[in-house]
Image (tube, rainbow, N blue to C red; front, side):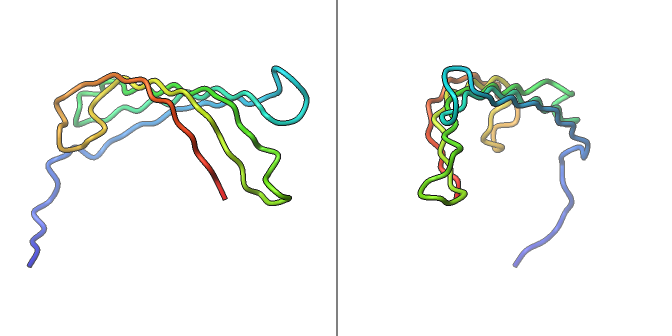
Amino acid sequence: WGFYTGTPNDPWWAYAGAEWAGNVFCKGAPHTYVAVHLKWKEDTDWNTDLSLQTGLWLAEGIANTSANMRVMLEYYQGRSAQTQFPDDREAYWALGFAAGF
């Protein structure tokens, strides 16, 4: 059984972001990239959530496909990404690997 009682959250959100990728160290892959993402939500009094990411983007493809990989370092500061803790603020560094196919 399920009941819809509406949402306790205010509906308005705003996002902004930018990304740059280019060849800093050599021609061809890997590319260096930098990205910034900002988020504001009405239900958190429009406080800013900030995500910064930088790394190497292996964008030439793998075996002539559109697949690519990224190795990244990310910094986040803002409301808890775990939505069950809406009043908590956190900051963290993350090292990651992403593959797109």
